[in-house]
Amino acid sequence: MIVLGSTSEVAQAFVEKALQEGEKFEKIYLFTSNKETTERFARHIDVKFLQQSEVIELDLLKEIDYNTFDTIQSNLLFCATGYLGEGTEEGLYDNKNTERIIDINYSKLVPVINYFAQKFESRRFGTIIGLSSVAGDRGRQSNFIYGSAKAAFTAYLSGLRNYLFDKKVHVLTVKPGFMATKMTEGLPLNPKLTATPKQAADCIYKAYKKQKNVAYVLPVWGVIMMVIRNIPEFIFKKLKL
Ligand SMILES: NC(=O)c1ccc[n+]([C@@H]2O[C@H](COP(=O)([O-])OP(=O)(O)OC[C@H]3O[C@@H](n4cnc5c(N)ncnc54)[C@H](OP(=O)(O)O)[C@@H]3O)[C@@H](O)[C@H]2O)c1
Image 1 (cartoon, rainbow, N blue to C red):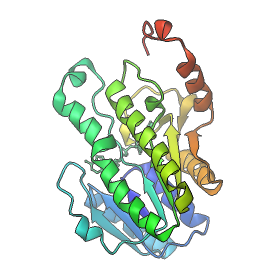
Image 2 (cartoon, rainbow, N blue to C red):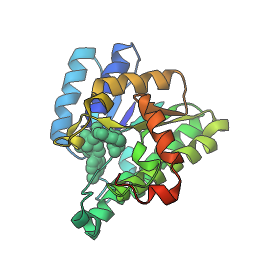
Image 3 (cartoon, rainbow, N blue to C red):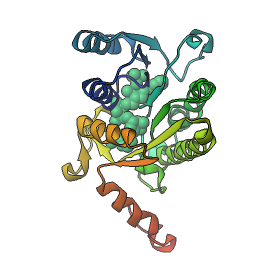
Image 4 (cartoon, rainbow, N blue to C red):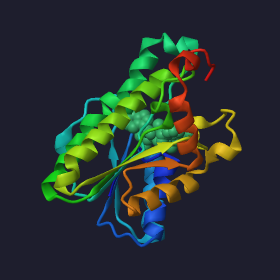
C-alpha cells in the first residue's frame, strides 16, 4: 500500500482500519514531508499489526527524484495530501500562498499519482483513492483558491477513473466535508457536520470495498452540496459563503 500525506490523521486512521479489517499488505510505503512524525506511526503499525512499513521523504515543494521509487509495487494508493492555506483577503492576494495551495493540492501532486497510476496500469490491477473536497464542487468566496485546486483535482480523478477503467484499475474520489484534523484546528466547525478521522476512515473504507466512484464523507454533505450546486448564479454571487 502507498500512502501520500502520511501524517494526515485520516490517512493513519484508514491504514489502521484496513489492517484491522484483515487486509494484507506486503509493505506499507508511507510518503511524507515530515519523516520524524511518520516514523512514529510506522513503528506503531509495525508493532501493533506485525506490518512491514517504510517511510519515504516526499515534499512536493522540492525536486522529486522518481528513480528512488523504482522498486515500489503496490495495489492500493491512498492520497491524503492537501493544503488549506490562507483563505483570508491577505492570503488571496499573496502569490506565495496561492502558488503553494495550487502546487500541493494539484500541480505537484498529479505527476506523483500519475507515476504510480502507470505502474498500476501495467499490472492491470489496483485502486487509487484520492481525497479531494466538497470545496471543489463550487467556488465560494471563503476559500476559492483551495476550492479551485480541489476542483481541478476532482476533475483529474474523474478523468483518471475513466482512463483506467478498461485497464482494471479503479479510482475512488473522496469528497470530505468538515473533518476534525490538524488542517481545521481552531476553526469553528459545526459538530453535526464534522467527521472524526476515524469516522472518515470507516466511510472511505466502506466506499473502497464497494468500489464506489465518488463518496462524500458524512452523507449529509452530498445533500448540502447538491443544494449549493443548484443555487442559480445570480443569487449565489450575492451570498456570503
Ligand atoms: N479536514 C477537513 O475538514 C478537510 C475537508 C475537505 C477535504 N480535506 C482533504 O482531506 C485530505 C486530508 O486532510 P487532513 O484533514 O487530514 O489534513 P492534514 O492533516 O493537513 O493532511 C494533509 C497532508 O498533506 C501532506 N502535505 C502537506 N504539505 C505537503 C507537501 N509540501 N509535500 C507533501 N505532502 C504534503 C501532509 O502529510 P505529511 O506531513 O505526511 O507530508 C499532511 O498531513 C486533504 O487532501 C484535505 O485537503 C480535508
